[in-house]
Length: 386
Image: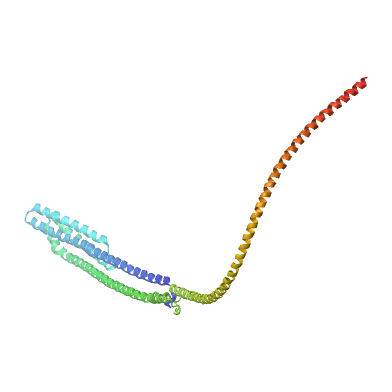
C-alpha cells in the first residue's frame, strides 16, 4: 500500500503533521506564557499593590496614633512647641493613611470574595479613622488631653481590633490567592509539560514511522532498482524486475522494465543481424572462390588476346606507314590546290577589271547615244525650219 502513495503526497503529509505539531507546541507555549502573565498580574495586583496599599494605610494610621500619644505626653509636660509639632506629624500621617486607603480601593479586586473583604475593610477603616484616630488628633489640636485619653481608652480599642482583624484577613486573603495562583500555574505548567512531552514523543514516533515508510516506499525500491541496473550494466538482461507500485519509484521501475525489454529486443536484432552477416560472409567467400577460378580463366583468355593484339599491332604499323604515304600525297595535292587557288584569284581580279572597263564603255556609249539623240533633234529642228 505504501508503494502506491506518491513521494509528493508522503512528504506533504509528513511536513503537514510536523507543522501541526509545531503549531500545537507553539500554542501551548503561548498559552502557558499568557497564563503565567495572568497569574503574575493577579498576584502583583493583590499582594504587590492592594496589600501594600492597605498595609501602608494602616501603618500610617498607627504612626498617627503614635504621634498623638507623644503629643499628649509632651502637653502634659508643658512642651507645647514639641506637642504642636507632634500633632502636625500625626495629621500628616492621617492624610497619608487616607491617601493609601484611596489607592487600595482604586485597584479593585479580581474575585467576589475579595470585593466583599475590600468593602469590609473600607467600612471598618472609616469607623476606625472617623470615630477613633481623627477625633483623637482633633482633641490634641484643641489641647484637650482628657478627651484624647477618653477616646484612647474607651472608643479606639474595639475599632482598632476590628480594623486590625479585617486588615489581617485581607492580607491572608492576598497570600491565599497568591498561593492558589502559584499552585494553578504549577499545575497548568505541569499539564503543558505533559502535553509537550507527549508531542515530543509523537514527533519521535512520527519520525520513526516516516523513516520506515520512506524506507519501504523509496529506499528499498531504489536499492532493488540499483541492483537491477547493475545486472543490466553487466549485460544480464534475464533478471526479472518486480512491479514497483503507482508512485514515482514505481514509474521509474516500469521505465526500467521497458528499457530492459528494449535492450533485449535490440540485442536480439543485433544477434540476428550477426547471423545474417555470417551467412553473407560465407556466401561471399564461396563467391570469391568462384571469382578466382573465373579470374584464372580470364587470365588465359587475356594471354590469347595479347597474342592477337601483337598481330593487330603489326597490322596497325603497316597501316600507319600507308597513312604516312597518303599524307604526303595529300600534301602535294594541297600545294597544287593552293597554286590553282592563286591562279583563280588572279583570274577573278582580271575579270573584275574587265567588268569595270565594260562599265566605262557603257557610260561612253550612253553619252554617245545622248549626243546622237540631240543631233537628231537638232537635225529635225533644222528640217522643220527649212
